[in-house]
Image (cartoon, rainbow, N blue to C red; front, top):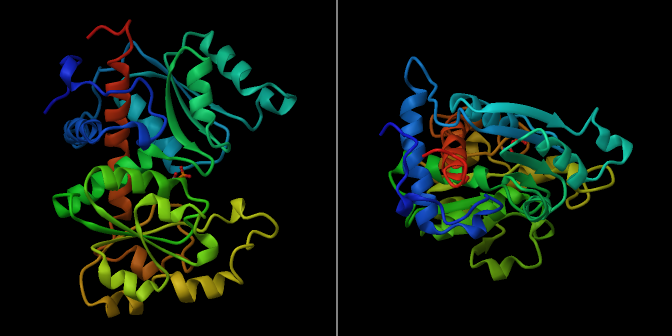
Length: 324
Ligand code: CP
């Protein structure tokens, strides 16, 4: 498929913003995947660019650090020929006390159509969508949601295993602080996958039982159950104090919940290994596991560009002034 500017009404997303996976239907997710398939083909051509968003201006607002998501969105926007402006809170007037709405409205006064925002506060993207006149894409809001990460994760499982429905996906580690975990749970369940969470009790949210997932605290048992193991990053920056408030030491965490080659080989089957990044090598996974033939960690990053192109393209199609 070579994506054109024309999308039939029935082929539109059901939402004007991408604030969280919770708001998407399974049909929305399938539409994003089909559109991403087309963009993935574009990204493998010698000329990796299409004119789809050449009349659209997108602001990337990052109030929290990022490598993969920031670069991936910027690349996706440039591959779609959008005009791009980048903002990070360090060195901006946010440090002089400017509010989020004032910051964004000042940027929008320069005629911006879409905002991609990462923010440390849960709900920041939703707040913005109610106060500014632009399409909002949540690039991670605190411990709440990281929808494009979940989309690229599920897309990568679909690519590797040919399906998501019925696949047993294990999510390991710091569930408590993880927007990736929450968005993955919503996305995988909407697509018919089975989800199990594994980690110490102190890194499980109190509401875990309401999520409709299995919970297992023994990593060896959990690994024997799954087809895919998504090893989450330990989020030291969200744990307060010296960064290790929820378990005795990184060494103990790695012993109980880290995946090294010996533990991986003991599973006795080909489990697909995932990690959203950035990896703490030697904590969540060792280098031998991260770089293993069954690891799709770099495929996740590659697929992120095509999936984000699909999201931006489909949301732009809903902007009234866009010529489709
Ligand atoms: N996976 C992810 O969100 O990585 P960054 O924090 O580097 O964007």
